[in-house]
Amino acid sequence: MNEVFNRPLLGSLALLALLASEEVRAQAMDHGAMGHGSMNPSGMDHSAMGHGQVMDHSAMGHGPATQAPRTALRPITEADRQAAFPPLPGHQVHDRQVNWAVIVEQLEYQNFEDTSVLNWNANAWIGGDIDRLWLRTEGEREEGITHKAELQALWGHAISPWWELVGGLRQDFKPASGQAWAAFGIQGTPLYGLELEATAYVGERQQTALRLESSYAILLTNRWILEPSLEANFFGRNDASRDQGSGLADSEIGLRLRYEITRGFAPYLGVSFNRSYGNAAEQLRDDDGDIGQTRLVAGVRLRF
Image 1 (cartoon, one colour):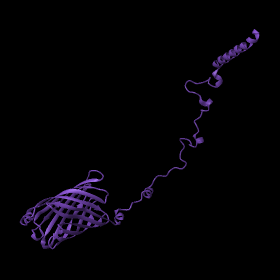
Image 2 (cartoon, rainbow, N blue to C red; image 1 turned 135 degrees about the vertical axis):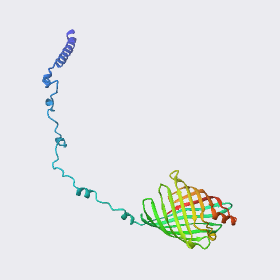
Image 3 (cartoon, one colour; image 1 turned 30 degrees about the horizontal axis):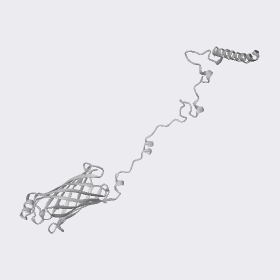
Image 4 (cartoon, rainbow, N blue to C red; image 1 turned 45 degrees about the vertical axis):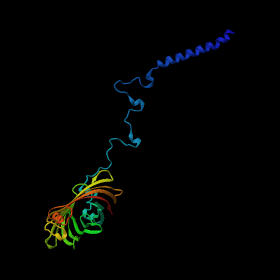
């Protein structure tokens, strides 16, 4: 009975002894059989591992790293450069395009001393980048009566990207019976948002005049714009029938804040300070007029 039970135990012990002998034999295995017996400490011999030669990239579709071009490139000539970069058309080609714009700078209601005034100031142009036809108009109606109204037709010629010479005719319809003028001057935008105009006039009965205008659009946000403006008129001679006095006759300083709902429609609020000087002021005093006025304004700026 004991012999029967001891047989499995003896078999297990024999199996464990066999496994132990195999592990010792594996640890003592000679590495020379793996091709590492002659390993050079200064550099591994990769030939046994298939790395004895530089990897052939041509088999991978890359070709040899130092392979020279099959066909040498010829030097680039001046004819090649001209063919690659032909001369571009000049400014005259673009100038042939006819463009136009209509800008109503001021269309506003003014209030001062229980009096209401409708004031307008607009301009339009048509033409190219170099030569344009300009139309200007401005005036005012007080208590339903037109007191000032004028229209100018000017030809403009650009002398630089920012300046333009203008010349043409001006017709005053009011005050009195009106007056015709020859006009010439300069206008431009030397800074972003800054507009300048200086126009001289030669009228009937040897009358001369000079008008200076300036405005500066200050961008508070993308839609809110604060615009101060200045206009001054000078005359060479007194003309009481047309309320014109020699020297500085009158000025208007304005400050308007507009909100551009779109580029073409911008309502605004502001204030305007109007004043007369010199002989023009004396004429107003004789007629019991006010030489200085502060006007509250509300209007809209339009662009087409």
